[in-house]
Length: 322
Ligand code: PEP
Ligand code: MN
Image 1 (cartoon, rainbow, N blue to C red):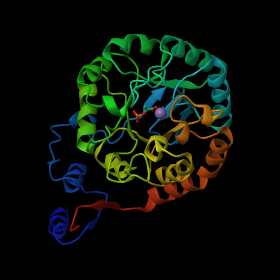
Image 2 (image 1 turned 60 degrees about the vertical axis):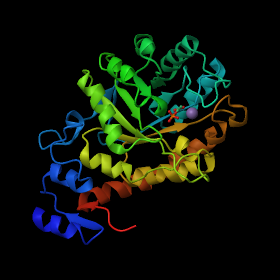
Image 3 (image 1 turned 90 degrees about the vertical axis):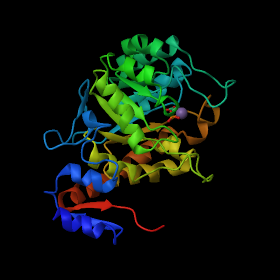
């Protein structure tokens, strides 16, 4: 079967591959450089012995059967803003509260975050709502401090290749959500995941958040194919951030539905009580009502994915003409 598949590879853009085909060969079909040895990301690759890892965060399992939504403001701005948002997203079905206390900004003059005060507010919101907390860490010097407050350490797109930070996260005792660099290939993303795993931390969640392309209609281009590719070659959970991909709130619900259908394990979504007044990323932040509607509309798409999962053969793209 494999050699037949391989011989078809040159003539056809797509191949149907039976379940029994060894996963490593499937990866090599996806990218010939992934040559069956996974030398660059073997600790996070899918293998016969380990086809999937789930990441436990308090009572939440990421990468298992549930679709886990992480939601909240881009940045923690004030106690009122955070508490109101935490309550609203919890009520709508989110399990994890996001919020940046240390903000990497495109402009050095933009709001840089509340720092430790932001972390304290996140902790308070967790106590009030029971939501777990995800927040970004930008520097290896902040790892120990942020790990005291956060349930998940977020590595932002600008830090995906900060190896000192990735290594420090190896010993932090918390799961890491690793965002794809805005100009990074999937192989580069997996190599960065490998650095965290090599440094001693296998609890890693991958996040597709859009990549930089020539397109200007959206802030970034959501690479929706990244989800099935990563889920085929890697053992790690994969979530989608539609907010930073879209850059505008009107596109966030439809991108979330796409993420559900292609098999993502969850979402990371920006929500703000009053997006026009947000200190960062207001254009892409959902109001409470929009978030609630989006959550209510997701279920049929998740059901579709479940049905599809039972019957589908592995559909692999293997390139072809432009
Ligand atoms: C964020 O999540 O607010 C953020 C800064 O994301 P990214 O690193 O994807 O730009
Ligand atoms: Mn943001």
